[in-house]
Amino acid sequence: MIVRSKTTWIRLLFSRHGSMFKYIAAPLSLNLLLALLAVYGEHVDPICFMHVSPIPFSLIGVALAIFVAFRNNVCYARFWEARTLWGTMKNTARDLARFFITAPDLPKDDPGVKRAINLLAVFPYALKHQLRGTDPRPSLTRLLDQELALDILRRECRAQYVLELLQQQLVQWHREGRYGDVLLTAGLQRLDVLSGVLGGCERIRGTPVPYPYDVLLHRTTHVYCAVLPFGLVGSLSWATPFISVFIAYAYLAWHAIATELEEPFGEEPNDLALAAMAVDTERALRQAVDAVVLPARLTPDRQFRLH
Image (cartoon, rainbow, N blue to C red; front, side, top):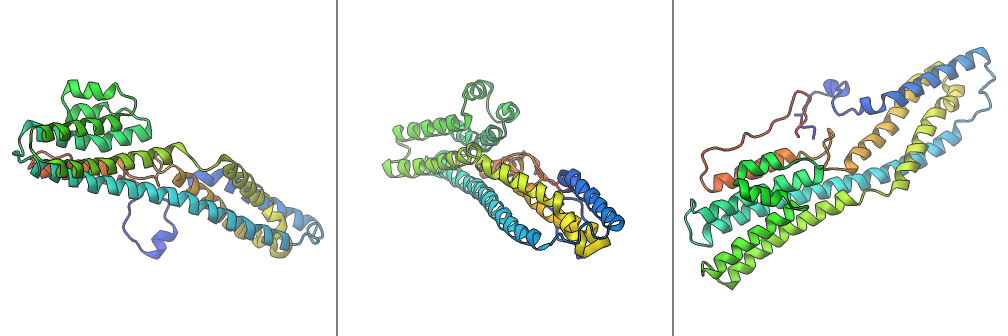
């Protein structure tokens, strides 16, 4: 995720970070080349494009803009839901940490409380690696003992197994008489919220935007940007390359942004900063048990990207 403080309008106008230029440089260069070719053709034969009306290009441009906006809204809705799910996970994890510390009437340094807090801290890491398809071994072995970490690593859905272990801990405390049925129900309801977060993230990850939308928008956008100079040269003449490239940049950049937002759990510049949110959650949980050593908070890199 690109995290950058507000800057002056002139610096923002020429900022490279977040401009999507590297993704659209090739089609944009093609548009410029075709625009120059159209200007050259119009200079050689002035009547070549005299009968080409810009009206059809305007109508197609309006229709394309509506379709691009629709797809961007769909993709941003996925991004917003993913962000909401991870915010819910962080809040619920802190609620559960408070529950683990106070409800069983045990000291904070009790082995059972420590184990529960560590399992709770492991959950966002396990979910992050599951969504990104990366190796969760370093995070698990750092927070858990080797035997428990290996037991979790053997599972396919590791985040779900972490919730199962947390529920076993709650049931054990209930059987020991640490709290009654009401508090057990309250604890299980919080685990259900985390299970809902897991299911929601899996749904977003496993059901992309229908492929025909991508194909249609990709083809329409690139073809429109390719033929646009020939529709403008008759009325704009030498100004065609500037106007054509500007219009093409807008359409192609919208398309590229939507493509990134469609998969909010990846590692593209505009995807969610899952690693930073997982670290922040762990810091909050470890502070709840008065831990002295905390993981370092992640900060944006030189390109203002927070992973």
